[in-house]
Image (cartoon, rainbow, N blue to C red; front, top):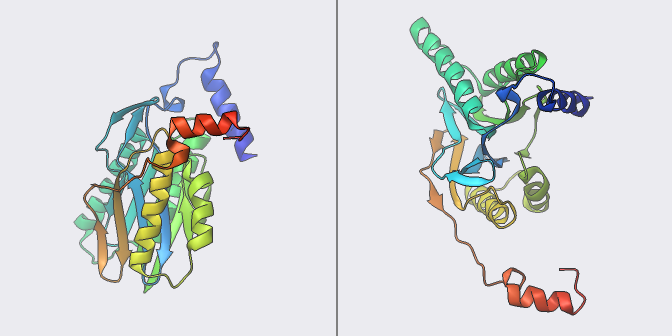
Amino acid sequence: MQLFRLGFMMHAALSPHAPTTHTTQPIVTGTTVIGIKYNGGVMLAADTLASYGSLARYKDVRRLKQVGENTLIGASGEISDFQTIMEMLDSMNQSDINEDDGYKRSPSEYFNYLRAILYQKRGKGNPLWNQLLVAGFHKEAPFLGYVDLIGTAYEENFIATGFGAYLAIPLIREKWYAEMDEGEARSLLEDCLRVMFYRDCRALNRIQIAKASADGTLVSEPYEISTEWETANFDVRHSTAATLDGSSW
């Protein structure tokens, strides 16, 4: 039903008889964001590329943000819509500061706020074209949730948005376990984003990592992950020869 409604919205937006609605035609977009829980915290990872259509246009767009004291937001999809979402969250945080009552919002509160906002926008036919990961640490426990442009919302131990839902999740299922430490979690996320760089034409090998734990939240500066292109399958000479020999590759 959700896919039908999303398809209806897209069909209406692309109909030659309907007025142009840019809100349902994403222009500058970011791809995969991955989140995993580990022993003592939760970690997000994303690259810094924003694509103008299929053009790798902006290479320093940071899609991992801290909200409040113990919450992280990661976004794929339309960058301008993500900026709108961050303006909403910043405004809410400023109101909290003005109240000066000492209350701190939990990650699950931000998660449910975003779920309500995205569902309301979708219901009005004016969706915020994003898939969001909400991560944080509260009451000695990590939190990781997913919200998308049609209001779908759930919590899980590991989540990937965009193309990563198809390529990264199988890798995580194979290697993830509940007691993995921070170093193992970081290595797994880097491996997943390396695969995304190889296989997703809208991905980049310049990435950010963010974590939330009992020690607080931290968003890293962008850095490049190593890549290896000497593998035979990436070599045109080898792959062409293999094809001539009857290989499906």
